[in-house]
Length: 613
Image (cartoon, rainbow, N blue to C red; front, side, top):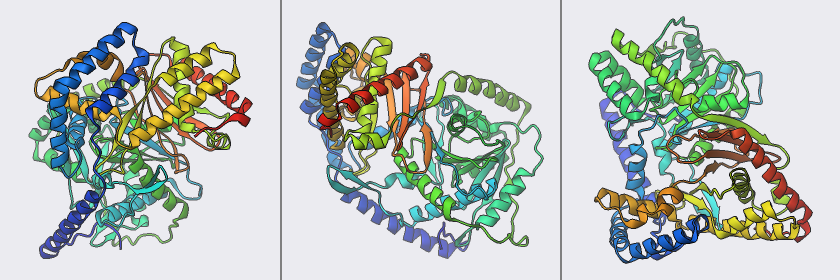
């Protein structure tokens, strides 16, 4: 039997906790069997840095940057590199692990204003239309609990990834952070809390919170019982319930102050906050009929900012139209872990059947969370709703599908679809704005111990040449040669990042160590770093298609980019989600479309000469 197995008897509980402690030690040992994340040499990183920023600098700026890099190599860089080497040799995680977590917890941005720390995924539609919407929700909840059981008892088969012909086991540490985890707001930085003994989830319906015990003894509550509890909740008459969850969508310092004040009002509030903090996950029931993909993705990201609890690591969104989505806290898990979670849920949705009605004598009613709110605090909530509305609406967001070709076309022509999309995004930017705009792309490094991802700066002189050739030349031969060179350069960058030798994490670690010690080397004050390297024009992300996901996205808040572009390369189309605060995204979308068509036409016309990787 799967599920969280906690006995109410103290002796048995203690025995099981000791067993789990032993299993956690075994799991830590397994993580340590993975190779450590390599620490690049200072010379490697500085050389790559110059290659990245060079195409975007004038001759004078290049001279100044080379001087700053040479000085860094001879002075401050040596000291900082030595400190990183000490960290790398003295930790059982990796040299960037502690700094990486600190960066995430220091973010003060709202989690609902399309923040990159908050991302959403939309499930592909359920094929079996005979299943009622709340049954779909109940199966999804039951599947999440099964997944939790596998994680907790270390029964989840390790993820595998093919890197340069090797089938590598990936680090599974992120899965331990999904369930029972909350991010608690702080004045300067947030903190993490996790319950290892939780047996309940929280369901939110029309802004009211309900506690559901979903694990009984040693068994997960059956689907029929979960469905009945959801039905009971949706039949409750609720009038003017304060949208307390909207507070979690405020900027983090503001929410930290308000949460502290809320807890001081009444012990009821302390208890209810504790129930939310320790819940395995949150289910958000939305009274919404079937909607289009773009609306569903916005619902996955933030909805209206109400009927949510953004402090949780995992929120499952279930609509009355039978659509599903998840919202995730990026502090705890990356997209690949969320993708596996959704794939397993979707498999159960396509194959699970429900039969009997639950026994009413066994059924337990959901328990509403109780709050004591003063008139002053209710006004605080009303003010927060206005603030969050503004935060959500300040960004333009649009789902767009390119339907001319997709993965099948790329496979037939033996060319990387990822490379083509990345080059198209940069070409579109160059044509629209008349300047080079490089893109940033996360590359997972989970084949290393406690590895997560590095941000690849997709820029080399070959990309500059590609954009200028496609914009200025009429020669297909010149275009295919430029495309060839750019695709190969992209492939080299990707391999380098997979080998843990990318520049972003390493430079960021060096910069953080310098900052924490009150030092600011000239390199980190140079325009090439402050205005170019850490400010990509386009921030991108993608996931593997064919994994029960129709779309996913995150937003702009905290990212110094003109555009955020998230995409799925599907069999015969590419689904994009584009966000911008600074530009008219309609023009950029048209430019991306034209760039894809131009590259596709060039590939087709010269297909007999293709030799891509």
